[in-house]
Picture (tube, rainbow, N blue to C red):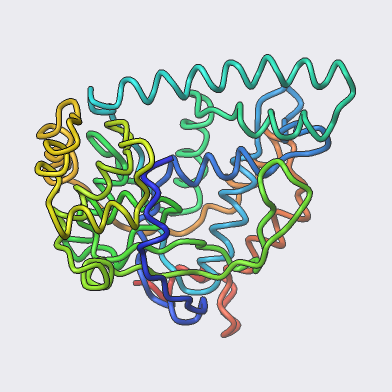
Length: 338
């Protein structure tokens, strides 16, 4: 879920053509949760193959990546490693919320309440071993590179951007800015509309770029102070101060500083130094490789259609969109990246 800094973050809408040739380090977990939450049928049931295995994420990976590759954007998917011990409480709380949602989902289905069932189904989505392994398999067959983070995926994605190997982190959350990413790209889609989770409504969306420099300049803060703002609001590593939102937090940090405010108000942030350290010096690695390959059409057809029941006609049409327009049908759209 990440920290909510939306009220103090200036965003700039861009067109997909503005992103041509850009490398985007995609927060894989954030993106997969989107697919599992939104790509569902009546009553919130996920897409499944003949053996009952969830395939909503596979559909999302295929069509999202065809869209962005067709528009000249180069995605790199960054997968989470072991979560920091500071995050244990958040992980357990999320697990409990999903368990409760699954129970309420069954109740809604038994009552024939499809609208409530849809809401609870989206809330119960989880990234199990099957989802992660099959996602990695499909990305590999598409020639899209993956990076395994030692810790937080967003922190590793931010590192890839810092190293100049990607232009921005692709995520809906703002945490990558706290980890030091120069840029965040939200709404990496070309659909122009997105279904609201749990509701039969759609909203118009366009890609948004958030610059770390613009954020700190607009708020009169540096990155370290921005982390303190997040700590006041609440992060995956700590509970925030009740009643303190992003605007108030910016004012507090800018005018008095976090420690002084906590002392005056008689408050305490458990493990304050450790929380700061988690953002400012996260567990990341420079031992990664970012290389694109050619899609394996035959293997993709076998994987998606032969094993998981996808429509061969739809998959072929999607893959054909990766072909260059110069008549050379043996060269993938990925060829423009070499």
